Length: 159
Image (tube, rainbow, N blue to C red; front, side, top):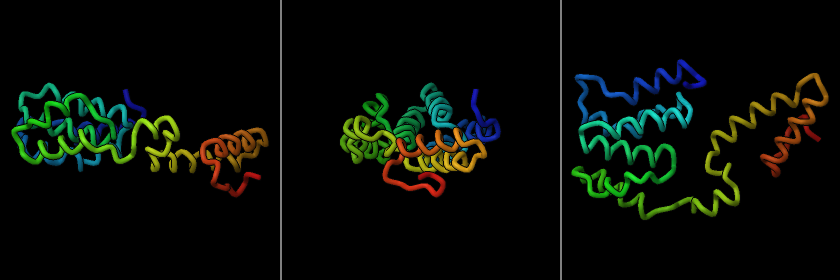
């Protein structure tokens, strides 16, 4: 189901309302839940998407806005969230529908990795460990991958 089971469990707890949950408070904290820190983007998106079947329309709108903010894409549900019963959600959904601060289409075509700087940094740090591998062919392959991924950056063990 998810690559990192403890993190997936934490994300599940953060993004699943309990039976006696204050739904309004739960909805307000979706964006700042930190669930995306603990689980993969795919699993975080799956948990958020499950909230679209919740009976509370404001929670569904909150989930939609949270998905747009956490995963940086514009889900179709924003069209409905722009008419939310909650004024804050309504305003945020309208703003999200208008704005495209990263010029998404252009960025996806030109440099998609720039949309995810933290992930690129994490991946490059992991790849950089391979530049110290005792096998020369592994070191070379790691340096080549890093060079393609981050051509303007230099790495200590890559020539």
